[in-house]
Image (cartoon, helix red, strand yellow):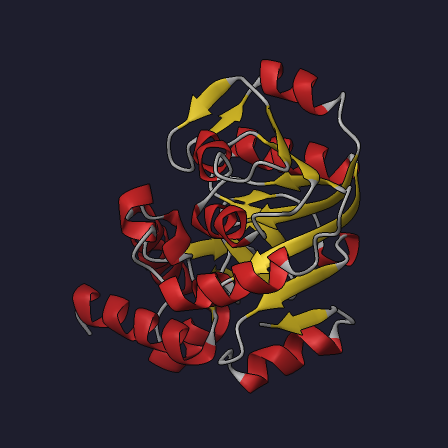
Length: 251
């Protein structure tokens, strides 16, 4: 079997089964495990999958650049945003993460809401300017362009001064076994810090992130208070998450 044929079969299996186990796949094709691992390394270098111990998992479409992500799962993100916005109560301190779904939440908040929204995303801050009752607190730092959010030591210092009632977290991967992941080490550290400073952490789970894994671990799913997913989410995936005791809200 040619290398291109093997790689195509790996990606087909990954799309159908949600994972590839190197040892099992090598036995199936009667090839050495080293050959399959080499294929996985090369596919991972192209951003087509995420290697994990023993094999590979799907990589997230949420790792695409920001202009591309603004066109992905638009209706799902709007439904998730509306469900998240409905959870915000008068007088609360809310931390909104960066990313396209967080911006949609900012726009979905009622115009007469009186609350404080803290964010490290300039995009979220701008989206809130038409809300006269919302006090906007913008955390500064070095901008990580993929999500247009502040990261680094300065951002971490700003976050250390905050105590939020609820944190709406965006990630690029939500996996029942591998937890919450993202594509940048510093961004993962920022998300962990915000979650630790928040009474509740709610994860924004648009379809392209569910079952996917990125390179850097944020926190485990047992450390969050809920995940908002869209109504059309696959029932088998929903059951997998529920079997792990994860609280899901279908938007």
